[in-house]
Every structure is written in C-alpha cells, then in structure tokens.
Image 1: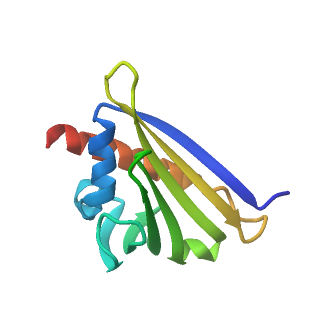
Image 2: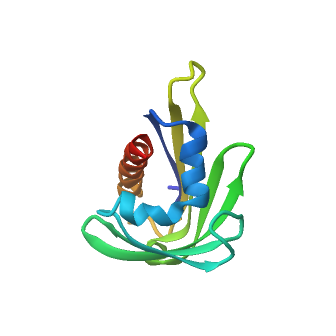
Length: 152
C-alpha cells in the first residue's frame, strides 16, 4: 500500500476567480475574520503577503483540536493558483509531506467560478488516515470566502 496520496475537491462559487485568487494571494490575513471557527491567527514570518517564497504561521482548529502549521507559499498569477507547502507543524506528526494547491477558474458562461483544491501528501505510516477533514475544512473555507466576497 502506497503512503502517497492525493485528494481533490471542486467547489462552484458565485465570486469571480480574480477576486477569490486575489484574496488568497494578497489578503490572506483576513481569513481569521472570514472563517473564524477554523482560523484563529496568521502571522507573516518571511517575505510579504503576496509573493512566492513567503512563509506564514497559522493557528487553526480542526476536528476540535487547536493546531499550528508553518507553510511556504508559491504564487502562480497566470493560472490563478497558490501552492502551500507545509514546512512545520502538527500535521507533520502524521505526514512526511503535505501540500495544498488552490486554483480558481472562471466558468465559461461567465456566471461565477470553480475553485479546485488539491492536497498531495505522504503519510508517515499506513495507520494514518487520509486527510479528509482537511478537504472538508477547505470546502467550508471556500464557501466562507465566497460569502465574504459577495458581501464586500
């Protein structure tokens, strides 16, 4: 049994792909306000808020547990995609590597966008479950951000 895996989820939103991408690229520090039941705090450790190579430290809650993570960000403006590579944190107690990729794409009919989240991971051992609670959280975060952008 392989310890490597990938989970993907697509969520249709009403907001534009540009607005969604730009919030995750340049205004990610708003997430603790937008999705406060998941995120408590984010701090910039290195770089700036909207560039590749930035390092951010998060305090978040998942499955009722208070957790922390430090990630390095890769920004791809052309594809409206952001890759978050986990460097440190509680998640690495179960995973050797963990990366999430967010990509926002405008719908062909011009009505809203589709956000695709991909989680690529390698478990430390076979007893570690798939990170399904992370995809569930990403769906909720995406819906929270969409609602925020529509009301902004």
